[in-house]
Image (cartoon, rainbow, N blue to C red; front, side, top):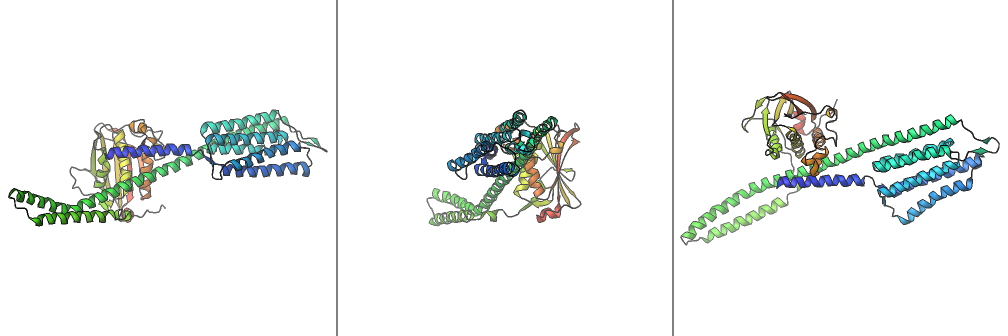
Length: 459
């Protein structure tokens, strides 16, 4: 039942991230509308200054009509959409295509690529790269590049009553077109990569918080169960003893009413104990507890005992044959247990037959080494281990939708352990009878800081 519960929670977590990936592409209508108002004000000011201030002969009525189209669009959306409306993917795409068409028409009436404000083609492409899905972002960038090509071929030149038509060298105009195309493409790709990285990190951190919350709930449940077992042990034992006495009295037809009263009293006591435990606040149950590190590792590895892989424990180089081997005392925190479980799970998943877990004490440091006899870390991912959404597995868990299959297991473990002051190292090391190069992860803490719950500052 616990395994099924975990799988259900993992699947729900995967569905949550899938939904978040879709919701990521939603934009607020108010934000785009405000940006368009700024663009309208800038366009209107530029047209008026160029025509009336600098004296260029512009098709002023046509330009104002194009600007008025944007004004009408903004007013129409303000009247038909609530202030807090968010745009769907398709609606946002249509809005940006409208902005590109309006900008293209206005530039076509005012000199084409010779107009220095042709640089504004970068704006819709950048917003699309940051906010839309990859296919739609490519569509917007493609339309922007196509508009640049068309403007180089079809545009109305700028003319001045005294200086005549403004003519730029063809090679210069061609250079402007090439620069705009490269700029739009490069900035769109750059912004897209940064947005994907930032979004992936935010989602991975959200997964970390959800994983920690789940581990804290399980830890609190375990604490409650232990408290119930301890508190109810005495009255239940009394009830059982009294019941046996009543069975013997029943055979002799000599039931004692005092026995029934005792059972009733102990039952009332059980009810009172359960009531007291139910009223315990969550923070009272999550107080810091300590446990031997070896016991913590055995608890973390417990769910993998039926995996068919052998797990061997060592303390300072000596193999553990029983559970009485002394090991360092550490805080039993939910984030530590969950992180160690993730690291051990990763080793078990890729091990051929054996996983070695060793506890090491060294000059004020406490360390854990987890190694498997699998193929080891691939060289092409070695430098990126611990990054979110990095995975090479295609197994059952990935198909089931669990977050570990999304490459979050190591990231969650690394993030939670580093928050507790640990440092992690990933490498391949040879070990075992076949001298195989298996994957190894080392976790090190400052022993004093770990027990005090203080994260040492880096020098």
